[in-house]
Image 1 (spheres, rainbow, N blue to C red):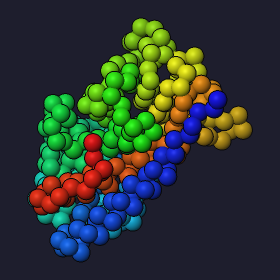
Image 2: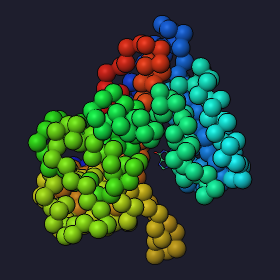
Image 3: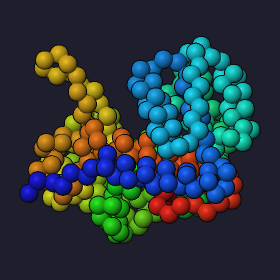
Length: 297
Ligand code: GUN
Protein backbone atom coordinates (compact mmCIF):
# COMPACT_ATOMS: atom_id res chain seq x y z
CA UNK A 1 0.00 0.00 0.00
CA UNK A 2 1.29 3.49 -0.79
CA UNK A 3 2.40 5.59 2.17
CA UNK A 4 0.25 8.31 3.62
CA UNK A 5 1.61 11.72 2.66
CA UNK A 6 2.20 13.92 5.72
CA UNK A 7 1.06 17.36 4.60
CA UNK A 8 3.50 19.74 6.29
CA UNK A 9 2.00 22.69 4.47
CA UNK A 10 -1.48 22.10 5.91
CA UNK A 11 -0.16 21.39 9.40
CA UNK A 12 2.02 24.52 9.25
CA UNK A 13 -0.98 26.61 8.14
CA UNK A 14 -2.93 25.39 11.19
CA UNK A 15 0.00 26.15 13.51
CA UNK A 16 0.38 29.61 12.01
CA UNK A 17 -3.32 30.29 12.62
CA UNK A 18 -2.88 29.32 16.28
CA UNK A 19 0.18 31.58 16.54
CA UNK A 20 -1.70 34.46 14.94
CA UNK A 21 -4.67 34.04 17.31
CA UNK A 22 -2.30 34.15 20.27
CA UNK A 23 -0.51 37.22 18.93
CA UNK A 24 -3.89 38.97 18.66
CA UNK A 25 -4.62 38.07 22.30
CA UNK A 26 -1.20 39.32 23.45
CA UNK A 27 -1.72 42.63 21.66
CA UNK A 28 -5.34 43.15 22.76
CA UNK A 29 -5.18 41.87 26.33
CA UNK A 30 -1.60 42.66 27.33
CA UNK A 31 -0.53 45.41 24.89
CA UNK A 32 2.49 43.29 23.94
CA UNK A 33 3.43 42.62 20.31
CA UNK A 34 5.96 39.79 19.80
CA UNK A 35 8.92 40.97 17.72
CA UNK A 36 11.46 38.97 15.70
CA UNK A 37 14.77 40.28 14.37
CA UNK A 38 16.48 38.33 11.60
CA UNK A 39 20.11 39.10 10.78
CA UNK A 40 21.73 38.13 7.50
CA UNK A 41 25.40 38.72 6.75
CA UNK A 42 26.50 38.52 3.12
CA UNK A 43 24.73 37.46 -0.04
CA UNK A 44 24.02 33.73 0.08
CA UNK A 45 21.05 33.36 -2.35
CA UNK A 46 19.45 30.46 -0.43
CA UNK A 47 19.74 32.40 2.85
CA UNK A 48 18.16 35.45 1.22
CA UNK A 49 15.14 33.37 0.20
CA UNK A 50 14.80 31.95 3.73
CA UNK A 51 15.14 35.35 5.38
CA UNK A 52 12.55 36.91 3.07
CA UNK A 53 10.01 34.17 3.77
CA UNK A 54 10.67 34.36 7.52
CA UNK A 55 10.01 38.15 7.46
CA UNK A 56 6.81 37.72 5.44
CA UNK A 57 5.45 35.00 7.72
CA UNK A 58 6.27 37.06 10.82
CA UNK A 59 4.27 40.02 9.52
CA UNK A 60 1.39 37.77 8.46
CA UNK A 61 1.19 36.48 12.04
CA UNK A 62 0.74 40.05 13.29
CA UNK A 63 4.20 40.28 14.82
CA UNK A 64 6.84 42.96 14.53
CA UNK A 65 9.46 41.94 11.96
CA UNK A 66 12.90 43.52 11.69
CA UNK A 67 15.47 42.52 9.09
CA UNK A 68 19.14 43.48 9.30
CA UNK A 69 20.99 42.79 6.06
CA UNK A 70 24.68 43.35 6.57
CA UNK A 71 27.44 43.55 4.03
CA UNK A 72 29.59 40.40 3.58
CA UNK A 73 32.60 42.38 4.86
CA UNK A 74 30.89 43.28 8.16
CA UNK A 75 33.31 42.69 11.03
CA UNK A 76 32.61 40.25 13.84
CA UNK A 77 32.76 43.18 16.29
CA UNK A 78 30.05 45.07 14.38
CA UNK A 79 27.82 41.99 14.27
CA UNK A 80 28.32 41.44 18.02
CA UNK A 81 27.46 45.11 18.62
CA UNK A 82 24.19 44.69 16.68
CA UNK A 83 23.32 41.58 18.69
CA UNK A 84 24.00 43.51 21.90
CA UNK A 85 21.58 46.24 20.77
CA UNK A 86 18.90 43.66 19.90
CA UNK A 87 19.43 41.89 23.25
CA UNK A 88 18.63 45.19 24.99
CA UNK A 89 15.69 46.13 22.72
CA UNK A 90 12.47 45.46 24.69
CA UNK A 91 10.38 45.33 21.48
CA UNK A 92 12.41 42.34 20.20
CA UNK A 93 11.65 38.92 21.72
CA UNK A 94 13.42 36.71 19.20
CA UNK A 95 16.80 37.06 17.46
CA UNK A 96 17.91 34.83 14.60
CA UNK A 97 21.27 35.12 12.87
CA UNK A 98 20.96 33.23 9.60
CA UNK A 99 23.69 30.62 9.14
CA UNK A 100 26.17 30.23 7.56
CA UNK A 101 27.99 33.46 8.38
CA UNK A 102 31.09 34.43 6.35
CA UNK A 103 34.35 32.63 7.25
CA UNK A 104 35.93 35.62 9.03
CA UNK A 105 33.13 35.51 11.64
CA UNK A 106 33.15 32.90 14.43
CA UNK A 107 29.60 31.47 14.36
CA UNK A 108 29.93 29.93 17.85
CA UNK A 109 30.89 33.31 19.29
CA UNK A 110 27.93 34.96 17.58
CA UNK A 111 25.43 32.35 18.81
CA UNK A 112 26.84 32.63 22.34
CA UNK A 113 26.26 36.42 22.27
CA UNK A 114 22.49 36.08 21.76
CA UNK A 115 20.44 36.38 24.96
CA UNK A 116 19.29 32.75 25.57
CA UNK A 117 15.77 34.06 26.32
CA UNK A 118 15.65 35.53 22.79
CA UNK A 119 17.36 32.57 21.11
CA UNK A 120 14.44 31.45 18.93
CA UNK A 121 16.80 29.12 17.01
CA UNK A 122 17.65 27.25 20.22
CA UNK A 123 21.34 27.19 19.25
CA UNK A 124 22.78 28.90 22.36
CA UNK A 125 24.64 26.41 24.54
CA UNK A 126 22.33 27.27 27.46
CA UNK A 127 19.35 26.11 25.44
CA UNK A 128 21.26 23.08 24.12
CA UNK A 129 22.04 22.15 27.73
CA UNK A 130 18.50 22.76 28.95
CA UNK A 131 17.07 20.58 26.18
CA UNK A 132 19.66 17.86 26.84
CA UNK A 133 18.71 17.75 30.52
CA UNK A 134 14.96 17.75 29.83
CA UNK A 135 14.38 21.31 31.08
CA UNK A 136 12.37 24.17 29.60
CA UNK A 137 14.43 25.35 26.60
CA UNK A 138 14.05 27.19 23.34
CA UNK A 139 13.91 24.27 20.89
CA UNK A 140 15.47 24.44 17.37
CA UNK A 141 12.73 25.03 14.79
CA UNK A 142 13.37 22.22 12.30
CA UNK A 143 13.47 19.36 14.83
CA UNK A 144 10.50 20.90 16.66
CA UNK A 145 8.52 20.88 13.40
CA UNK A 146 9.51 17.25 12.77
CA UNK A 147 8.40 16.28 16.29
CA UNK A 148 5.02 17.98 15.81
CA UNK A 149 4.47 16.08 12.57
CA UNK A 150 5.42 12.77 14.20
CA UNK A 151 3.07 13.35 17.15
CA UNK A 152 0.26 14.33 14.78
CA UNK A 153 0.81 11.19 12.71
CA UNK A 154 1.58 8.65 15.44
CA UNK A 155 0.17 10.03 18.69
CA UNK A 156 2.44 8.78 21.49
CA UNK A 157 6.00 7.97 20.34
CA UNK A 158 6.79 6.07 23.54
CA UNK A 159 8.88 2.94 23.05
CA UNK A 160 9.37 3.42 19.31
CA UNK A 161 12.71 2.79 17.57
CA UNK A 162 13.86 6.08 16.02
CA UNK A 163 16.88 6.49 13.76
CA UNK A 164 18.12 10.01 13.02
CA UNK A 165 20.47 10.11 10.04
CA UNK A 166 22.80 13.10 10.47
CA UNK A 167 24.53 14.53 13.54
CA UNK A 168 24.39 18.30 12.97
CA UNK A 169 23.87 20.75 15.83
CA UNK A 170 20.95 22.30 13.91
CA UNK A 171 18.93 19.15 13.26
CA UNK A 172 20.39 15.71 14.09
CA UNK A 173 21.45 16.21 17.70
CA UNK A 174 18.43 18.24 18.92
CA UNK A 175 16.09 15.87 17.02
CA UNK A 176 17.58 12.94 18.91
CA UNK A 177 17.11 14.78 22.23
CA UNK A 178 13.45 15.48 21.46
CA UNK A 179 12.76 11.87 20.46
CA UNK A 180 14.49 10.67 23.63
CA UNK A 181 12.32 13.06 25.68
CA UNK A 182 9.28 11.43 24.05
CA UNK A 183 10.62 8.03 25.20
CA UNK A 184 11.84 6.68 21.85
CA UNK A 185 14.85 4.36 21.64
CA UNK A 186 17.12 6.65 19.64
CA UNK A 187 20.05 5.96 17.33
CA UNK A 188 22.01 8.76 15.68
CA UNK A 189 23.49 7.41 12.45
CA UNK A 190 25.98 9.29 10.27
CA UNK A 191 28.46 8.98 7.43
CA UNK A 192 30.74 6.65 9.44
CA UNK A 193 27.96 4.34 10.62
CA UNK A 194 28.64 0.71 9.66
CA UNK A 195 25.80 -0.93 7.70
CA UNK A 196 23.72 2.26 7.57
CA UNK A 197 20.84 0.58 5.64
CA UNK A 198 20.69 -2.19 8.25
CA UNK A 199 20.59 0.32 11.12
CA UNK A 200 17.86 2.40 9.44
CA UNK A 201 15.82 -0.76 8.73
CA UNK A 202 15.30 -1.21 12.49
CA UNK A 203 13.44 2.08 12.75
CA UNK A 204 9.74 2.77 13.29
CA UNK A 205 10.67 6.44 12.81
CA UNK A 206 13.34 7.66 10.36
CA UNK A 207 14.47 11.29 10.28
CA UNK A 208 16.82 11.93 7.36
CA UNK A 209 18.99 15.04 7.71
CA UNK A 210 22.22 14.42 5.83
CA UNK A 211 22.09 16.70 2.79
CA UNK A 212 22.63 13.85 0.31
CA UNK A 213 20.01 13.83 -2.49
CA UNK A 214 17.73 10.75 -2.53
CA UNK A 215 20.20 8.69 -0.48
CA UNK A 216 17.58 6.75 1.51
CA UNK A 217 15.89 4.10 -0.64
CA UNK A 218 13.10 1.57 -0.05
CA UNK A 219 15.58 -1.20 0.89
CA UNK A 220 16.54 0.84 3.96
CA UNK A 221 13.00 1.11 5.29
CA UNK A 222 11.00 -1.22 7.51
CA UNK A 223 7.50 -1.68 6.03
CA UNK A 224 5.09 0.77 7.64
CA UNK A 225 7.78 3.09 9.10
CA UNK A 226 7.19 6.84 9.34
CA UNK A 227 9.78 8.77 7.32
CA UNK A 228 10.57 12.46 7.87
CA UNK A 229 12.75 14.01 5.17
CA UNK A 230 14.64 17.12 6.29
CA UNK A 231 16.80 17.35 3.15
CA UNK A 232 16.40 20.19 0.67
CA UNK A 233 18.75 19.52 -2.26
CA UNK A 234 18.63 21.28 -5.61
CA UNK A 235 19.53 18.90 -8.45
CA UNK A 236 19.79 19.29 -12.20
CA UNK A 237 17.07 17.77 -14.35
CA UNK A 238 17.70 16.16 -17.75
CA UNK A 239 16.17 19.20 -19.52
CA UNK A 240 18.81 21.45 -17.88
CA UNK A 241 16.42 22.92 -15.30
CA UNK A 242 16.60 22.19 -11.57
CA UNK A 243 14.29 20.66 -8.99
CA UNK A 244 14.22 20.20 -5.24
CA UNK A 245 14.62 16.72 -3.78
CA UNK A 246 15.03 15.49 -0.23
CA UNK A 247 17.50 13.04 1.31
CA UNK A 248 14.90 10.33 0.71
CA UNK A 249 14.08 8.76 -2.66
CA UNK A 250 10.42 9.71 -2.29
CA UNK A 251 8.85 7.62 -5.09
CA UNK A 252 10.73 4.51 -4.01
CA UNK A 253 10.26 4.87 -0.22
CA UNK A 254 6.57 5.83 -0.54
CA UNK A 255 5.93 2.26 -1.78
CA UNK A 256 6.95 0.75 1.56
CA UNK A 257 6.70 3.43 4.29
CA UNK A 258 3.56 3.90 6.38
CA UNK A 259 3.79 7.68 6.12
CA UNK A 260 6.25 10.11 4.53
CA UNK A 261 6.86 13.85 4.22
CA UNK A 262 7.23 15.28 0.72
CA UNK A 263 9.93 17.76 -0.43
CA UNK A 264 8.89 20.50 -0.87
CA UNK A 265 5.78 20.78 1.32
CA UNK A 266 6.88 18.72 4.34
CA UNK A 267 9.42 19.86 6.91
CA UNK A 268 10.15 23.27 5.29
CA UNK A 269 6.81 24.98 6.03
CA UNK A 270 6.82 23.55 9.57
CA UNK A 271 10.26 25.08 10.27
CA UNK A 272 9.00 28.59 9.58
CA UNK A 273 5.77 28.02 11.54
CA UNK A 274 7.88 26.82 14.50
CA UNK A 275 10.04 29.94 14.32
CA UNK A 276 6.88 32.02 14.75
CA UNK A 277 5.74 29.73 17.57
CA UNK A 278 9.13 30.08 19.29
CA UNK A 279 8.90 33.88 19.06
CA UNK A 280 5.50 33.83 20.79
CA UNK A 281 6.86 31.40 23.41
CA UNK A 282 9.87 33.68 24.04
CA UNK A 283 7.59 36.72 24.31
CA UNK A 284 5.28 34.98 26.83
CA UNK A 285 8.22 33.79 28.96
CA UNK A 286 9.84 37.25 28.96
CA UNK A 287 6.61 38.89 30.12
CA UNK A 288 5.69 36.13 32.57
CA UNK A 289 2.50 35.36 30.64
CA UNK A 290 0.90 31.93 30.16
CA UNK A 291 2.28 30.03 27.19
CA UNK A 292 -0.27 28.74 24.69
CA UNK A 293 -0.69 24.96 24.45
CA UNK A 294 0.96 23.09 21.61
CA UNK A 295 3.48 25.71 20.49
CA UNK A 296 6.52 23.96 21.89
CA UNK A 297 7.82 20.53 22.88
N1 GUN B 1 20.56 28.00 8.20
C1 GUN B 1 19.98 26.84 7.84
N2 GUN B 1 19.03 26.49 8.74
C2 GUN B 1 19.04 27.44 9.69
C3 GUN B 1 18.26 27.63 10.86
O1 GUN B 1 17.40 26.85 11.24
N3 GUN B 1 18.56 28.76 11.56
C4 GUN B 1 19.51 29.64 11.19
N4 GUN B 1 19.74 30.69 11.96
N5 GUN B 1 20.24 29.48 10.09
C5 GUN B 1 19.99 28.39 9.35
